[in-house]
Image (tube, rainbow, N blue to C red; front, side, top):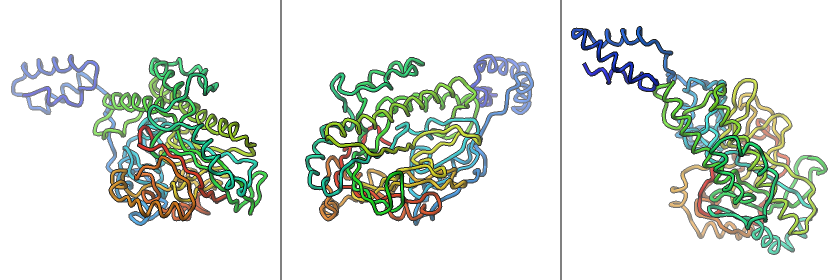
Length: 446
C-alpha cells in the first residue's frame, strides 16, 4: 500500500512527516488492512478541519449586458469560477467586462471576510483623474500644440519612467506604512523614482473638451470646459506588491483548501497576512493618487493655468463594507450621488458620471469601454490606415499609441454607457479628446 499517495490531503500540514511515518508504520503492522481502513485510522489519530473547496454551483451574480452581444462568453465563464469560491457571496459583471487574470476585468465580487490580491489585480488602485481649467475651448484649440508640448514635458510613461532626484516630491513618501514590512521597505526607492509618472500600455494623459449635459458644482448643463484626464496606477511598486501577495495567498490556500484554481486564492481578513496585504494595498492607493496629483499639479503650474475643479475615482481595489469585502477589478464605485469617470479609448469620448447606487451591481459601474479581444489579437487586427483616418477626421493629436490601444481595440463606449445610463449611472458631461498621450508598450498596466 503506497501510503504517501493516500495522504495527499494532509501534505499541507506542518506535521505531515509525522503523519506519513505513523501511517506507514500502521500499514506495516496491519498488512491486510484496506486503504479505507488506513485513512479511517489516520483521521481518528490526526483529526483536522475539513479542507475548503469550490462549490458545484456559483453564487449569484448579475450581468449588465447580453452575453456575446455585449460581453464575451469567456468572461462570463471566468466569473462563474470566481463565484464558485467558498468565500464568494454575490457579484456582478459590468458591460465593459472581458477576460482577465483569474477574475474578469469589469468584475465585481463580495467575499466573506476575505481579500484576494489577484482579484484586486496587478496594477493596484489604478485610477482616473480629471482637472478642469479656467480656459475656454477656443483658447485651448488656439494654443493646443503648445499645451501638448507642456504636457509631454511634464509626464513620463512606462518602464524606466522617472524624474531627476527632487523633481517630484509628495508627502506620500513619508507615509509610515513604507516601514511596515520588509517588502514595502524594499520598494520605497523604486516608488520614489517613479513618483509622478504613469504606466505603459493603456495608461494615458488626455487634454479634453468637456460638454456638460447636467449641472455639476459650478457648471450648468450646456456649459463647456477644458480639462486634463489621466489614467494610471501604482506603477512598479504596485505590481511587485501584487506579485508578492498573489503568491503568498496561493501558499496560504494550499494549506486550507483543495481544488482552488491558480489565481483564485484569497487571504482571510482575520489573519496577519490578510491585514498586511490590506495595509499594503491601501498604501499603493495613496501612492497612485499622489502620482495623479503630481501630473496634474505640474502641468497646471507649467502651463500657467488656473484650476477650477478636480475629481477622481479608482478601480482595481477592495473596499471593506458591511456585507463583505467588495472587489472591483476594472470596475468603479457608483454609490448614489458619487462622481465617477468612465474613459473611452484614444479616439472616442469619455464620460463624467454620477452614480445611482444600483444595489444588484454592488453600487458599481464600468471603468471604461472594455476590450473585445486580447492585446495580441488587437495587434493582429489593427488597420493603421483606418486608425489614422479616424484620428485626423476627429482632429486628435496623438503620441505614443500602440496598435493594441487604438479605438479599434475596444468596445463602443457609446454602447457601454447606454447600457448603464439611468440604471447604474447618469451622464454629467461628455469629454472629447483633442490631445492624447499614451504609454506605448504595455508594462505594469491592468
